Image 1 (cartoon, one colour):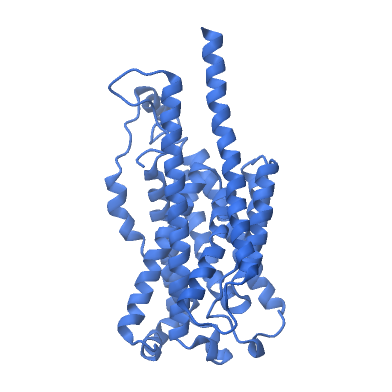
Image 2 (cartoon, rainbow, N blue to C red; image 1 turned 120 degrees about the vertical axis):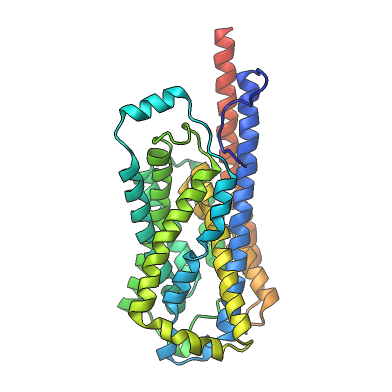
Length: 382
């Protein structure tokens, strides 16, 4: 998975058709690997979050403590980025050709644009990390994910000029239905007698993280296409090293912001009490946070990979289609009251399969048209 799109393999001359087929095969493998990372990350994150809040007795807590610990969760979501640094150096950067070097030397240095890109994304990621951690405790899990896909589609249409066809629209509809009926149970949600109706504050906490997350996906796609590729540091190629670079720098900035928030809010003083209150003890408290931090990075790398390979909308679709699978694992792993994998969630699982099948069919048609167009050009030249 060194390169998502690359030149013809060296060492022997082959036809353009054969080269395109090999690149497409490599592209499909990369798509499935990134999708697997998203599904794995989603499952691990939700299982560990439920474990954390069950052991923390959060659902039985009073409202003063119900909504605490959100800066810690936001920090955990971004803080494990150093594990990606060795991977970054394992994937070598492709050598730029002489034309690329000469073009780059004639243009203004792109350094400032890259810094502004990572800085803006780091701020957005820190915002939605903090507010998502809070919103999940206020309004639950399902309604958050459903609204973000609609916003991602809207932003993609205007920012990324994404062209929607019937297969993408069908995929979005099935995805929304699958997430609405198949969302997993969450142990951090308040009890019914404590939650009450949504007030204005709850709606703001719901809207702002979904806005930040959807906007960040579209800006990541724009950054890959208009900044990182056009800087020509990677020879006009889309490579896996780009994903790692963006994730490392964006997470670094988000980690700094969340760490400052943790200190400024005084929440760091509560960490000792939280570890002592943890049912399984301090060791499991630390291990659960470490597992969450690693799982978030697995999820983020897969998400960024699909943004680079396809689009922010497709990455969000895959992320949301994991909900019924996560719900099944939560039912098997935890004994939540009145939580079962009934006919609604089975239907949601089928809807997720249809949503992915619809989008993959669109991608298959697009790749097939590329080969047909190349064959047509070769026949005309012949």
